[in-house]
Length: 405
Image 1 (cartoon, rainbow, N blue to C red):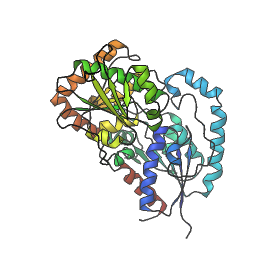
Image 2 (image 1 turned 45 degrees about the horizontal axis):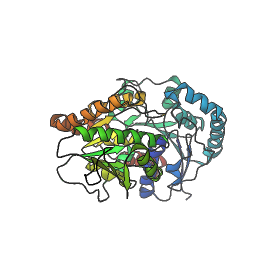
Image 3 (image 1 turned 90 degrees about the vertical axis):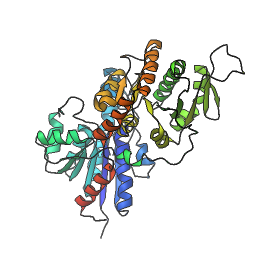
Image 4 (image 1 turned 180 degrees about the horizontal axis):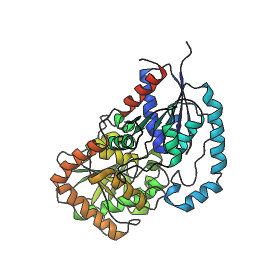
């Protein structure tokens, strides 16, 4: 019997990431399934790293997929050939789809409309949409039409509140999916050299360069401010960085007045003697994301999915807006609405020295507030849990294909 084939369509880096975890679980459950992908935004690295064939053209646009943040970004994307690229991607999907038994589309109306136009049965995961932002999900008419199509077998959401909201609005096939990446945030046993009983602060500057480098420079400035006001027992700082950012650490250290030695950044105030111990140190890793998240007491986040995962694990988040294109005040503020009490955004514009001082004070206050820390432990899993999204979605795909593991 010929093996079944699924095409994955996604529009966004986070969407590629969500889908890649579903793919990994599918491979474990049913290795014979053939899979291919069409990432609409970016190069589709999450798929390439799993050796999933990509069926059409890919290109990184100036906005990185965040053109809704500023009209200027959208203009730059158009100048870079966005419309032509999207048209060629759609043609590739329409050409490939007749050979597929099922489509899974992750993202907003672009990927869902691609899936609808294939005339094949599809499973929708609207991972970037949530009713938590405004209390009710307002769906544009095009997306509503796609999701209500008889070919759409299920609409997975990333939080249970949105699934209930859609059911109330008349989409009976809406169901809770969750955050697939959460299933793989498991400590690997990496030695983080943490001292017991001292709060550990995770620095998450994001993964998209060059913005992540700018964000990390801001976070280092914030760490200096925290070091000035933290209790005598101190805090421990651990940074989870992408490999590209690790390569730039030397330049960042020089520009910010830090010393770098084997992945450890240290800062001594100007004029202090060599014998004095540094004011603060930050240990940086490119291979310890899960461990850093798991063992941290608080997260300083300037990212999307990484912050969601931190919230889901019950961590308190402090956010400072950056220059963008992704992590601007607008993005941070929306993330705060999504995360509820777990996330606090300090400042309404790219962080200034004054905003950094306020944020430092807030970090100390937050770590001293045991009631609030306990509430975060409850709030996060309630909003984004329980784990198991990749298996829930993968098993539904298999059932839809008539495959049993």
